[in-house]
Image 1 (tube, rainbow, N blue to C red):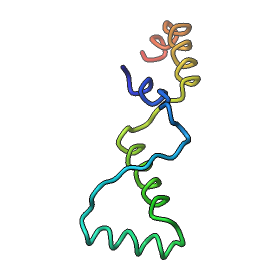
Image 2: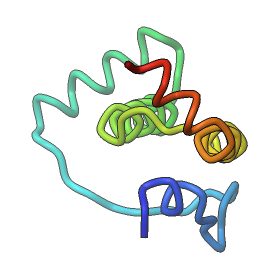
Image 3: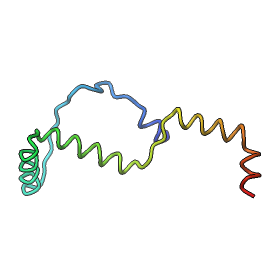
Image 4: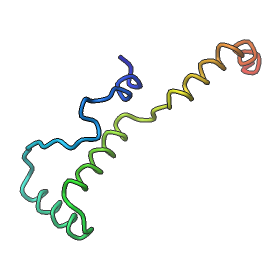
Length: 87
C-alpha cells in the first residue's frame, strides 16, 4: 500500500476523541506543562499539534489525489512532447 493510500485511509473513530495513556520523561513533561500553560492551552492540544507536525514532516510531501491524477494524465497524454522537450 502506498503512502498516499495510507494517508487517505479513515479510522472508524475519525473526528472522535480517544483516550490513551503513555509515559514521558519527568523533565520533558514539566516543560510541556509549562509551555501549555504559557500558551493558555491544554496539554492535549499541544500534543496533538506536535504529533500532527511530526507525522507530516516524517511523511514528506504528499500530493493531493486530484493533483496526482492530473499529473498522471498529463504524463500519459504528452509523454512524447516531454521527451522532445527534454532533449
